[in-house]
Length: 592
Image (cartoon, rainbow, N blue to C red; front, side):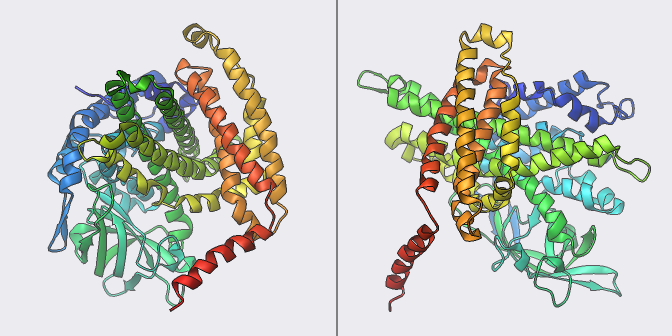
């Protein structure tokens, strides 16, 4: 019996974070549901015990059912017939298991039949499911749409749609169109209000829609005549039972085969407005996208975990030259770096989730009769800013590390890893999309660079630096010499911070195009230092992370020094020479 939660001590550690007490206190709002619902906790210990038990249930389903179905689902995939999608048989079994366990709607309030869990266990569930099957992770993760309905829709819409999530209603967010990929301001699908019928109707085409034949859809559409920018877009909820939407086709993809990616046709599809007109992209989609990026972070960590474990297992079983290949430095060095990248990604994932938890839980307390106190407003603003800062670097680095770990897992398998008999081949294909959807790594740079130029990342890093290094007695007992290792790691991070600050100074006063040219390097430098510090913090509480802290900090030194020297030896002229070099090839390609 496999259990993907119980076999991974890194996960349960996340519930011991000191911020969890504040998060649960806010989420439970004084434990007001205790006695009203038989599954509502009475105190912190009870709540964390519920988190733990539910993660065990999901971990068992992930290990025994979802993972067992993954290979066949990858082969079978979903089918489109007569404008409707049928999941692969294994996907249907996954759905049934999780629905029967009552774990859908895990983060929704109990009044809507949810479990009222915080983002930390919600994200953890996404990691567990994605480790088992990244494609199915998309279907599971789209319950984020319910969070958007809960935050922004009317009470009527909430009561109509949210209780269905726990019963297994599937969701999709319908944003992308043939001519509107990353540039969502270009969305053209038309929303028209019929005064006589008192309803909105949608007409147009959507493309690359994950789980496109879902029961409940959130659709971005142009509601304002004669507009062409974000101010003309509104957000709508659609019920599959209302008709008017057909699936034209399922895309034939490289990976995540179990997740149907669809092209959709809307023909007078009735819909209901979510929130206010004109705020569809500006407010509602941006909130949903941040949640989706957190979800892709969890998916990336899940794939990284699977890739690392497959590589570790194979290296321990495969013999060459009369010894196991794990005993060769070239192999165990790869495995050590894979684990360090995995644990750094996970540290960033849960730190981001905790920040989201605090500000969302505080905002949820606001009612017509309850305002936030000045201290609460300050706290919400701070954690909202932290979440905005961490989300793009989580999405960018976790997905890039996920791809690197899948690549290295195949390398450790050698020729066998290239064969479909081994799961690393599927993991490699599944990993590739993570740096692309929900905002490419390049777009994460666009989101993150302002926190480089305005000094926010540096301020966050300096905050970590100011914290005294306090290694627990438990860590020292389990890992003699941990204090010296961690002191050395922190000394390196202090030096790397000065290097990063100097690199920013070389770029920040230059023209905007040059800043954009160097932005990825600066954002990565900040990200690697922040992730090293997050590992350093975890290592002071648990010996699980000491080795990875040392390894990842050493890699950060190498990665950042390379980027520093590139920036130092560059100047605005490099823009011109780079573009001219590429343009020469364009002239050759289009010569005729």
